[in-house]
Length: 96
Image 1 (tube, rainbow, N blue to C red):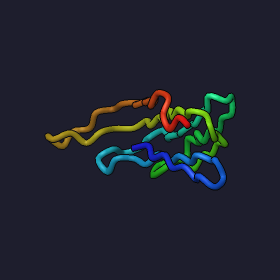
Image 2: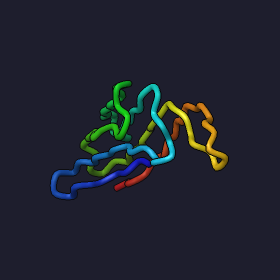
Image 3: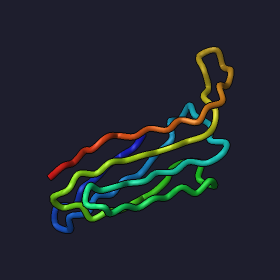
Image 4: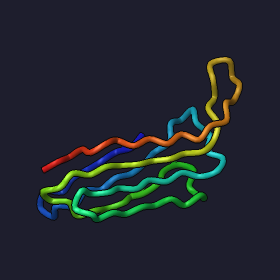
């Protein structure tokens, strides 16, 4: 799950990525944050297994977009594992 926070006094957005408890990370995870004003930050160390980030971007008056990835295996309902790389992008959010 990706989490996005905003600090009104500094104009900075902060984001982190945390893994789902049923997902075993086998090849890392990462997160990036891009602002519509051209600024960006990323944290994609393959060594991460619990969370990635935080990443920060100054985006007062702009929109931000998060992209996260995680590679590993899901524990399914029948207790088997499904190998998967999951990548998700939020689209432009927190505009203002």
